[in-house]
Length: 517
Image (cartoon, rainbow, N blue to C red; front, side, top):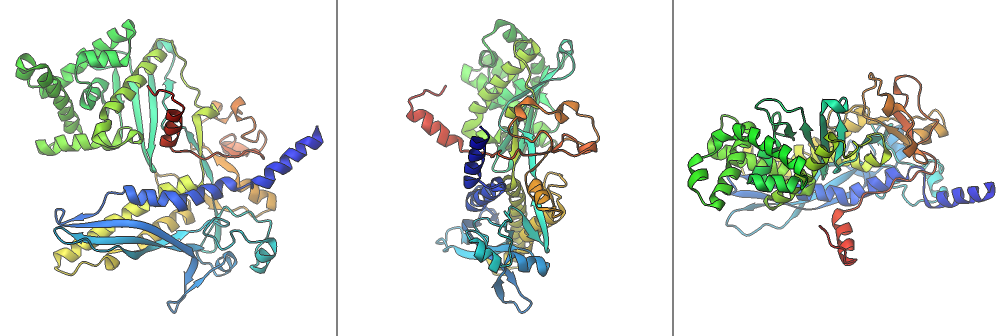
C-alpha cells in the first residue's frame, strides 16, 4: 500500500510543480487576460467624438533593463537581485488616433510601460532551461519560481481566499424568529467586482421588506422598483416570475403595495387610468427608472438622471450577465429566482448556505490578483492619455499618441502595489517578502492561502478546520495567535483548477442536445 502511494505521489509531481498554480495563472494573465482588459476598456473620445483612439494588440517582450546611457539589455533574475533592479518586461500596444470624416490611420506600436515578470513563467528567461543552463545563469535548479523581483527584493503574491463569485449565497441574520436574511452575489466581469445584496427585513409600516443594493446606487431601494425598471413592469409579471407558491405570491403582493407609495410621485396617473396596456407598462417602467435616476444623480437635469439610471443598471447590476441593454430582462429573472430562494430561507423551506464550506469558496492566485491590478492601472493610463490629448487640443498643438502616453503611470501603479503589498480595493499584505529562511519555508510561503477576514474578531467557525478542506488544505500548518485558522497552506498534492468560460460550457451542453431553461 505504502509503495503504491509513493508511486502516485511521484507520478503527480512528474506532471505538476508545487507552484504550478501561480505560474499557470500568470501565463493566462499575460497571454489572454491583458488583451481582454484592453479590448473591453471604453475607447477614448475627444472633442465630442471628433477624435477617437483605437487600440489593437498588446505585445510583451522578454525582461530587459534600461541602462544609464539609454541602451537596453536583457536582464537575468540574478542580475536584478544583485543590482536592486526590477525584473520586468516592456509592453507595447497598437494605437491609432482617428479624426471624424477622415480615413482611418494605421495602427502603430506605442510603449505603454513595464510589467513585472514572474520567474519561470512563459516570458521569463529561465523558462524551459535545463539544470545545467540554470547553473550557468547562477540560478538554483531546485528553485521553482512563482515570485517577482521588484527593486532587487523577491516578492511572493499570496493566494487569497474569497466567497465564490457569480453565485447566490444565502445568509440568515440572527435567529429564525427574527425573520431577517439576505442573499448576496459577488458579480465579477473582467476583474470588475460588483456586490449585489438583496435583504429581507421584518415588515414595517410604509417600508418595503425586500430591498436591494448594488454599486453606484446610494443606499437601498425596494426590489419591486428595480424589477419594474428591468422590464417586469406589471404587478402580475412580478408576482408570477418570483414564485408559483400562493404564500409567497401574497407576500410579494403586500410588498408591491408598500413599494407603490415610494414610486407614486414619479407615475403619471392619467396614463395609468386612460392609457392602453402597453402605455401603462411603459409608464411604470419609466417611473421606476426615474426613481433610480433620482437616487444616482440627484439635483441633475431630468434627461441626465434618466440616462444615468439606465447606465448604472446596465453596467453595475450583475455585470457577469452582460452590460448590454437587452440583458435587462435576464437580470430581472435572475433577481426573481434569487428572491424566491431568500423567501424559502425565511419560511424554513431551504437551509442558508454554509460560507465555510469549500464549495462556496474560491482561491484567487497570482493571475487573478494581477488582473485586478492591471485593470485599475490601465484605466489610470487611459484617463491620463485623455487628459494629455485634451490639453494638446486646447493649446492648438498637433495631437501625438506617443507624447500623450506617459508610461510611468502604468509602471508605477503596478510596481508600487507589488513592492508594498497594498493592492487595489484597499487590501494590504497581498504581496510579501519571500521567506528565504529555508527551502521548506520558501515552498510553504508560495503555497500559502490567506483569508480576508479581520484578525481582531473571533470568527470561530471560519478558523475551524472544515471537513470539506480534506485533501485541499493542510490540517496542521497554520500559525499560532490572531492568524490561527485564517492563514492556511495548501495540502501537498492539492492542485488548483482554472476557471473556464461559461460560453464553452453552454456550447458543450447544447451539442449534447440538453435544453437550457
